[in-house]
Structures are given as structure tokens and as C-alpha cells.
Length: 201
Image 1 (cartoon, rainbow, N blue to C red):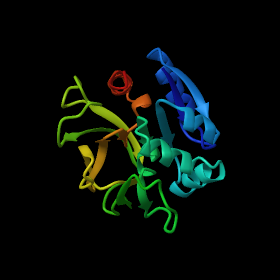
Image 2 (cartoon, one colour):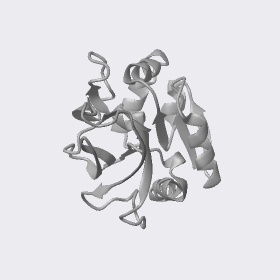
Image 3 (cartoon, rainbow, N blue to C red):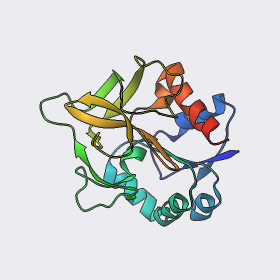
Image 4 (cartoon, helix red, strand yellow):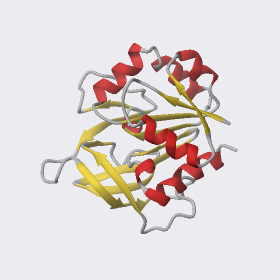
């Protein structure tokens, strides 16, 4: 099954591609709405600023096709900023709308902790997770972000704590998303991607 990796003009796309190739997945870069519309599985990677991300999607007229794919039940995996873009908005870019798959606002990490949150951290599992299947509870994942969705979001299956509890893994219906970078998280991250691929079969 070919995986459409959304190319909005920047980000961690090459490293995500390589990580999926190592697992035997076939990928294509989706830069046009018709590619997203035809996709059977979508990966939405992202790094950088929320405004640049959603603007990149909008300028390539990918926003409506991603929303249509969501409504049609196409499996979508968001990574880092890709997770944040699934929410309605972000404090990083007031006035810029996210994809709106979830109603909450992404928040800045509080001033009393180091930001950006860069490095390895553990998760606190809230409920059973398909993405974390067979991964030890004390496993570490690599994070690099200054904003995060609140762990109170209904779709949260695993949280992480850095200043406040934030959503580290989200699963709801056809949506999957991680705030950490699985492509930079070694064998544990590879297992997360493998679990996603296997759940699509």
C-alpha cells in the first residue's frame, strides 16, 4: 500500500520517508489535492511554525482535501507539528485556523520550563494504544517542540509532562498522531511506525 506523505514545502519529510522505506513501505510525496484525494493512507509530518505549516497547506490547496480525507475515513498519521495542525488553532499563530479535526487550542509550553522541549522523554499512558503496542511502558521518545496540545483532549491515549501535561499520542477513529519524532526515536520510534502500518492492513 502506497503512503502519501503530505509535502507542504518544508519540514522533516525526507527523514520520515527514510524511516518508512526501512520498514518496506512505498511512499509518494503528495503536493497536489488530487494526490491527497486518491490516497489510501496519509502521513502528515511537520516541523517549524504553525502559521507556516497551515499557510503551506492552504497555498497548495491541500487543506480541503485533507479535511475530505478525514471525513472519508482515510487513515492519517500526524507527526509533531502535524499533530498540532489537527487541532482548531494554536497560540503560536492567533487567527490561523488548523485543520479542526479536534476542537482544542494548542498551547505554548509554560515559561517556568525550558522551551523548546528538546530531547528524550517518557510517556504516561492514559488508555490502550494501537501505536504503542508491544512498546515497553518505560520507553523513551525524542521530542522537539515549544507548543503542545493539552492532554485533556479526548483523543489522548498517552501524555507527557513538561510544564503541563500534553498530548503525546492521539488516536481517534481514522486519526493517529504523535508529538514526538518517531523517525528520530530509534528502534522504539520504528516500532510506532510499524504499528501504524500494520493497523492499516
